[in-house]
Amino acid sequence: MRKAGGSHGARFVAIASLLLLVVLAFVDASVIHRQKREFVIPDWIEIVDEPVQAENSKTIQRAVRVRDAKVTYDGAQVWRVRSSEGQKDLLSNVTTDFQDTGLPSLWTRNDTTVDVMVRLEEIPRLSRYLKQKDLEYQVVIEDLQKAIDEENPSLSEQEMEELEGRKGHRMEWSSYHRLEDIHGYMDYLAETFPDVCSVVSIGNSVEGRPLKVIRISNGKANAPALWIDGGIHAREWISPAAVTYIINHLVENSEDLEADYYILPVANPDGYEYTFTRDRLWRKNRKRSVGSPCTGVDLNRNFGYRWGGLGTSKDPCREIYAGSGPFSEPETNAIRYFFEASAANFKAYLTFHSYGQYILYPWGYDKRVPPDYADLEMVGKQVAAAIKKAGGANSVYTVGNSATTLYAASGGSDDWAKAILKIKYAYTIELRDTGKYGFVLPARYITPTAKEALAAVMVVTEACKSL
Ligand SMILES: *[C@@H]1O[C@H](CO)[C@@H](O)[C@H](O)[C@H]1NC(C)=O
Ligand SMILES: *[C@@H]1O[C@H](CO)[C@@H](O)[C@H](O)[C@H]1NC(C)=O
Ligand SMILES: [Zn+2]
Image 1 (cartoon, protein in one colour):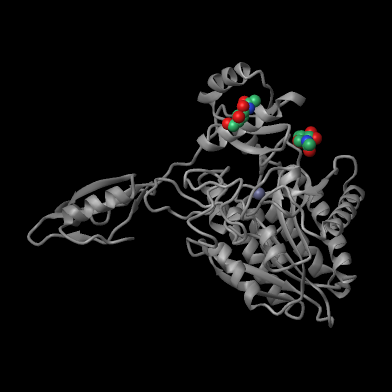
Image 2: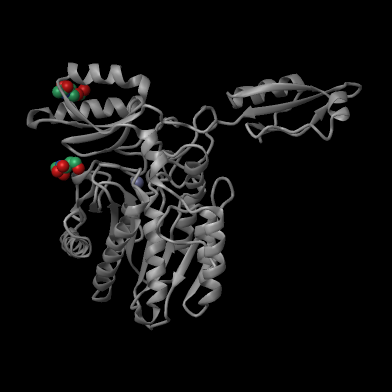
């Protein structure tokens, strides 16, 4: 909390202007005293200052903030807007407009297709707007809140405890798990298989949660190293789920490993927790911006190569806010320092996202490719083939350059890994699906999707070995 000097009155003004949601609570001290035992602060109120009691006053002044209530999406829908051949320019303009206003919220897009989330009260206006522009759309998710409610039928507390008793941890892949379960699983592996696994925290998030990286290695000499991360965008739940599945596979088959793996399954732990407790569709981290009522930086726009270029925003209220500067966020900074300190021989940098089923290589900052893009394209195609083999008819992944295949976005981790770290195989992999459920992919798809992600890791491992 930032402290303002001067009288209490002035201090309150300062705090109130800093946090726009501040209300002042004046609680009579004698009342508190008398009712000490009964006085419970409800959980929707958060105290944001130190207690102040003026001399000879019965009044204690506290600055409190009303916590955000859980966000619901009753009546909200996801629409797919399509452009015909001659409308690409128009769609691009309309998309820019959506992005600048934040209404409706953009889910994903390419040259011809844009998925947007529309709140109930916005439906008539957006429908009129699109008709006026002569753009066609279809409703993909009829009732978003229903989809959210049905997506993750998680285990009961009793089932969880049984699981933990039986296995020593709470991780499994039929439901999406909280951060505590994922971190508990990593710690369990490090304790149980100390010859193969070790866990370090490479830093802390804005809210102080550890950024846990597991190293998996059987100590083979001259093994190449691969970096794998997940969950940099909070709402992409399939990503940490798939990455933990990969961890499980690598540890169980550790005698066959031919590379060393450094894996950060939840790169944005605050955002991830926030998607469980407050808002299922939160994307960014949880940094409060000074001078703005809005929270959060898009961590995948915050890396320090071509920071702040195409596909980013300087407005803290936008989903693609790039932060106040390159590596302004502790989460991205921790990754940078990890690589600066590491002596490992990194040959691949794989970052898992959703959705769309794409295997993307640099650059993201513009529609250009690195000099060795033919290698990236070739290995990308091998990855797509292996995924198809692992998953079948629904497992079609498109391979291509990031900015061309999807859209330009600068400050991404893959561009930074390729340009600054000079890591050969830098890929962003957008996991399932192709839009039927989007971010709200039901938990029954975790295992099939994770098998695809694992197939990708195995193919890239092979490519690294032959470098
Ligand atoms: C898109 O925006 C550009 C730049 O503002 C403008 O020149 C162009 O006419 C627009 N195109 C359409 C189809 O609206
Ligand atoms: C754009 O996305 C849609 C929906 O996933 C897909 O059908 C289409 O093939 C994509 N277009 C390009 C050029 O990739
Ligand atoms: Zn993402």
